[in-house]
Length: 290
Image 1 (tube, one colour):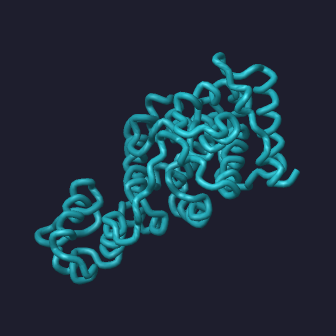
Image 2 (cartoon, rainbow, N blue to C red):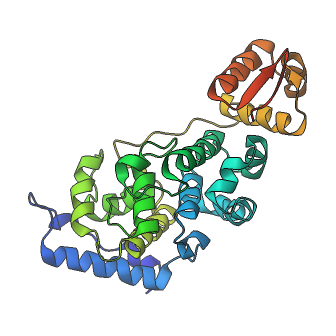
């Protein structure tokens, strides 16, 4: 079956007050399984069972396209092959390895999570939702991904591509779809015997829908349009961190000169980066934190 033929099914008429019938659940599961067999992506983290490597992939994939993560995942794992190595490595080296993925807060959160896992859990990634949610940068979707993909536990995992699937198939023609509408169907259809491949199939089908039909996620009440990156504070934050990776111990005025930005804007961002733990001040100069 071609990718185009997978766009046609519509299960929206089968959604009732009590959810889905057993027949609908079976047809939906068969549809997703067939799609995954024929169109599924071969991604490196899908060959992993190591919870640490799953954690890295889940953090990298937050708000980031798969193609960008593919370029960074294997080199990052090669440099930091386990949780203890990541914990013991200075932040400067970890940020340098992360460069190009964007959203550097995720990198800092991953580094801090490594420290918490080593200190509190003996270097073992927790296998319980409540313990995972205590880790920096780990929300419910990331925690569910770790439980499913590392430990084979059938947690309810809802992310952008999966949301696309349910909006397209079960809420066709409807705008303002809330997650509370999707979650009962997601739980009812979950393959509890093989959650790994089930969610891989859902995500890959959702990715196809996005390519062929556009941003279905805009019909979700949880959709938030990303602000323009060019010229944004987020871009300047990344540029300042990149500069300090190459040239540590710079003053604010030296940073301003290198960035061609005004002192007030640079001062605010430098203060934010210091408060968040990315950089530290030594006298009048700044460098990446230890």
